[in-house]
Image (cartoon, rainbow, N blue to C red; front, side):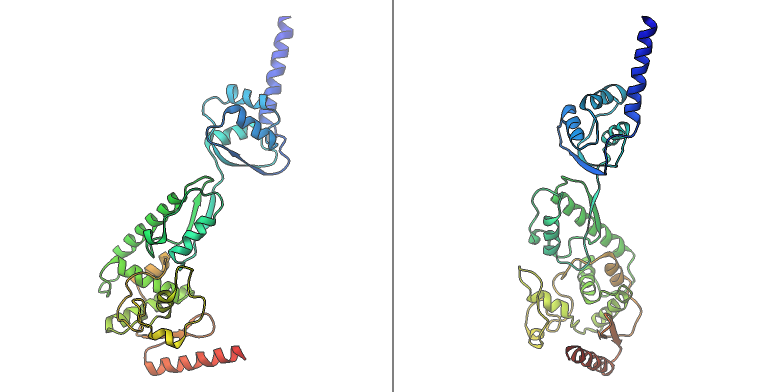
Length: 319
């Protein structure tokens, strides 16, 4: 009887080990959300219902006797087809939750970024008003988060990232720039960001604006005019008209010299870096060239020729 009992016990242990280590019943990759405060039984039931585990009792035995050293953690988990019970338990104990991500494009306004965060699935809670943050407060890049993270926490990470980037880049700035503070650099970077979508042009566009600031020339930036004419419904949704350039508002850099009173968007690292270490150039003007980039000029006469070519291109496109 002792031998028989030992044999049965040994056989049971082998079967339990195989059930613990062998591939499980999951037929296809799936995700399961484990709520905060869920009991072991509730977790087991969710896993069985999702097809990740075969039996609630087997799961309970595995957690209690085979892997009792760490508690199971809440969150969203991705399980691969055929995952073993051992790997399921290890994943839950390690808290290897699904990492989600969202990418914020450079040049969006704070209002636009907050709208994207509000619409992002998996985040919870309220958001601050755009006026509480101000324009240029958020750093555009890719951010990772987990299911159930608070929106305000993600916004705080974005503001901290912008502050850190601006501080670091300001410390390595070129000497003798006509920019008195990091905030002024941020303003000009937002203009550069909105002026060109061509990465290779950022330094040269920044150089043009730096040259104009040094000479006391008006920046004459169309995006600043458009920003000043926009309202709470969003950016200006029409091309600028000639009459718009004469409208007297603080952001009209055709009317007012120097920088506008604040950023017009949230610039990325590259545009901030371009402003603080601009390309060495004698250019004072630029205009679109029809290829997505710009034609640059040192003199007004040369610039006028570039403008004439751009207008001819626009006319040909309409016809």
